[in-house]
Length: 87
Image (cartoon, rainbow, N blue to C red; front, side):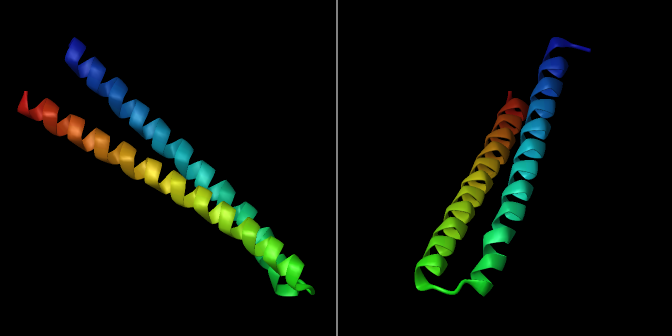
């Protein structure tokens, strides 16, 4: 294997690992979000509902942040591949 191919393979593996980790993190956060959603249905006071909505919103923001990171990783990887093809 040439040095260039080895470097490309390492970059590919790094992207795959990063995406896999991000997917796992999003899955866990989504499961964590399920609990307050269930509690929201049975909340009795407006304060309790507001607290649960805030928790749900925070988790959702974290999920969206992870999705953005994933999109950035994919975009950077695709750009690097294009640059490599042009070289």
